[in-house]
Length: 385
Image (cartoon, rainbow, N blue to C red):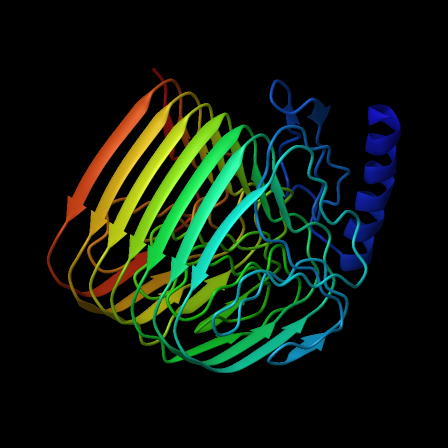
């Protein structure tokens, strides 16, 4: 089965690459994962996979292709994970995509959404795979605040978000939103929350959130307002976000946001956690404008072993402008930010942690402007224990 799957994926991936005229060598890595996940993944450009899920998984999956909620305009959707007003579970399935979701075991969902919404416009294209959880996942989301307008425009999806092993997410989001505009070409993942939002995954190539402009996106894991994990991945890549082992995420988001501009290019790999990961993020303060510009990505962020992150972000800032050519890692925090990883240029891997890593960051103060310009590099950070 695995061989047949890989053969099919190889031919399909090659066809997609040919059709889209993707430059050779965008994805420089072939990834095979064993252990928690008993199957191999081969990604070329925009990857579409067969996925087998074992264990307990809980989440909210929304699939839509050519449908409208608040307003959805587009091609064929795979994943749309969209909440409007106080929403519990909204499952929208439709469009052309490879696999939607396979969950084996038990699923537990606890979502609390609050606030007022004005308009929601969603535009999209084609999806490959949206959101996948492997093992046991416990998600608790609390969303508060008001949102005025939401515009989502997308394209083609490859792969969005994967969790392997046990994952526990607790998100508390507060604050006020003005406008969120999402315009895209080819999406990787559309998991988007507006207002005070927990996991805001915005994937697009040539689209904008607050405003996102770029090439072909794989994973955009973006939070607007006071945001915990801000992962900006742009371009064509196989996988966006993968957690292997046990992962516990606690996010508290608060503050006011004006506009968020994100620009990206091509990705190789987005964010990977292997082993046990404990993330606690608290973000406070207000942000006016955020501009993220990126290029091509090779590898984004990888954690191997046990990783514990405690992030407290506070303070006010005005503008954050990030301009780059071809990125390696886009992990960007604006305002008082703990982890600021700015990687530029063409390189294979962005950030790798091996063994046990514990990070406790507290950032306070004000930041006016942040300009990050990058060139070309092969490897940025490799940490081993």
